[in-house]
Structure formats: C-alpha cells, structure tokens
Image (cartoon, rainbow, N blue to C red; front, side, top):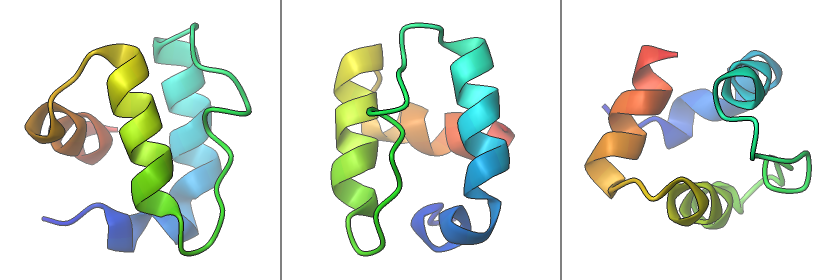
Amino acid sequence: MNYLTELKGNWNDIKDRLKNKFTLLTDNDLWFVEGQQQEMLCRIQVKLGKTHKEMNQLIYDL
C-alpha cells in the first residue's frame, strides 16, 4: 500500500500520533505541503533512522 495517497485526508491525526510516539519530531519535521509529501517523509525517515519499508509499515500501523 502506498501511504502517500492516504496522508492528505488523515494527516492531522497521523501527525499527532507520530509526535506522541517519537518526541524528537517537531512541527517543522511534520509540516505537510501538498506535492512535497515524499520529501517530508524522507526527512522523518532519516531523523528516525528507519528504512523505507519500516516507514511504510509505521504510517500504515498508525
């Protein structure tokens, strides 16, 4: 499942869950800009030290 297509409608909920689970993430890390979802998720992935597959599963599980 490609989570990028799911993000827009659920982003506020996903963002809150990510911030609660990973306190090192900031509002700037999680700032959603239409058309730049992949860049944002890559920043989060690097900051959390996750692989692409792990990020897919993390977002999907939230």
